[in-house]
Picture 1 (cartoon, rainbow, N blue to C red):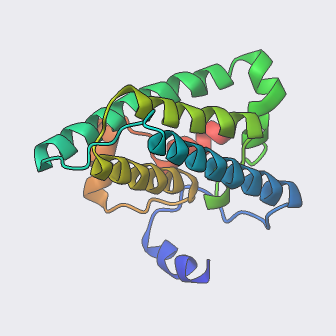
Picture 2: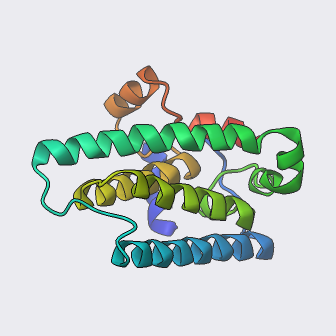
Length: 183
């Protein structure tokens, strides 16, 4: 955190520095990571049983295509799920926990109701059962997903200015947008 604070003055800060993490915040983040781990192990078992296939000999073009398909399909599916999470009955039951943390920070990426973590993780494994994506595309997608998720929750713009302009042009949620969403 201290190293990041030395870098932050060079970057536009979208959110004020957040206060210390609460016990509930740590507990929910731990639960989310644990649920994601369990779902990952379940996915591995599905792969070993042949229920989930991965293309292990893909060309560069297939890897790029599969990555694009994963990004678009998962982004759309997660957008739909997130819109559903904001419906009054579900929001008041579960999703409000994520929005209890008005000042976004990296840990809040993992702060959610366990049911949401289970739903998002299950959606990922389900998506992988629908098509034989390349292993490389799966790894690239997971890295992009983690990077942009952390970037949206980090409280400042971790991108160079040219990338901010590109992301804004495509209406990709930037940290400031996500901060306002939490508020």
